[in-house]
Amino acid sequence: MRRANLPARIEAAPGFLRMFRPGRLTVGVFLPVATGAPDGAAMREQERLVRRAEALDFAAIWCRDMAGGEPTFATLGRVFDPWVHLGWLAGQTQTIALASGAPLRHALHVANTAASIDRLSRGRLVLGLAAGDKPAELPAFGIDMERRATWFRERFEIVRRALDNDGPMLGSSSAPLAESIDVARKRVGRLPMLVTGNGVQPLRWIADRADGWITCPRDIDRQAVTVARWRSEVYAAAPGRFKPFAQSLCVDLADRASLAPTPIHLGFRAGRHFLLRFLDALRRVGVNHVILNLAVGARATDDVLEEIGAEVLPALALAPRDARRDEGEAGAAEATEAAEDALPVQR
Image (cartoon, rainbow, N blue to C red; front, side, top):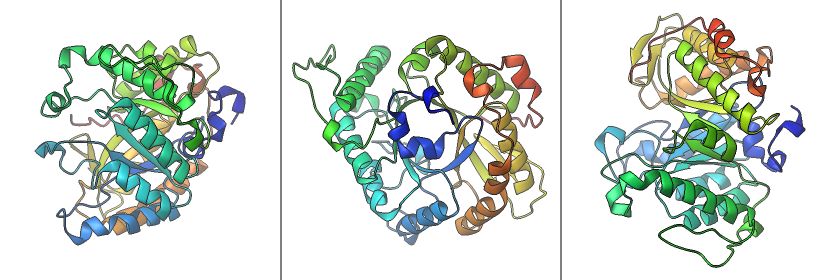
């Protein structure tokens, strides 16, 4: 990896380097790794499963930050409060990256909490910021759906300046800040900030201001075009900089390795042979990190983690490195030609 292609001081962020490598694809896991009743044994199993994922060389563990309890998102990415849980996991793990999206909390709370977890984990935090899209949550935080775009831009800049201690705080249209807020003493290095979804922003803005982009799963051919657009925008906004592309994926891994894929919501049910081919196709079109949601599966989580860790991750690690797509040199047509497994992903 050429350090000159990375954002300033990003080389001091072990979490970023664990997850994102030019020309490579790494794999992370959403919490909860396994589902269960809120007071059940499955909740207490999360730390053990995270430690096992770390030992198997999964790159990251992800928490989804949600204030409310919308039924459709009850099992997607959250167990306990994500910041409390990530702080706990920082002491339970050594090398795995810790990542979370933060859609609604106040910018200064996000900056201080993120800086604290980053310090406790010795630089392993990767921060995703989102604009929030759950109608049941937004009014409770005083956020007007019509002003989300402005609110998100202001909030992103406050968090970035607070983390970098980069001069006077700009504040926001609703809450001006007169003083600089110094949280730099808590940090290990520059804390990576990614945008989750589109933040109600043009892609060029994300390419210019963020350290990377996290988006939803798509068919391989459609994702190839999306990646190519991202690389083109990054190349225009920050020539020579590596800014990774990440996506989520729901996987119900069958115990029969050769089972052909069947679409499910935001992913598929299949055996490991197809999963490997699909992930490798994503790698070849320029995806750098995939966040697996395994809680949708029927098999025991231990078995799924072991199978992916033993059979899929090593094969991905041995795949030939091709950083051209990460450096803006591959167009949409070339990227699309690399896709072979265009499985329809249910949305």
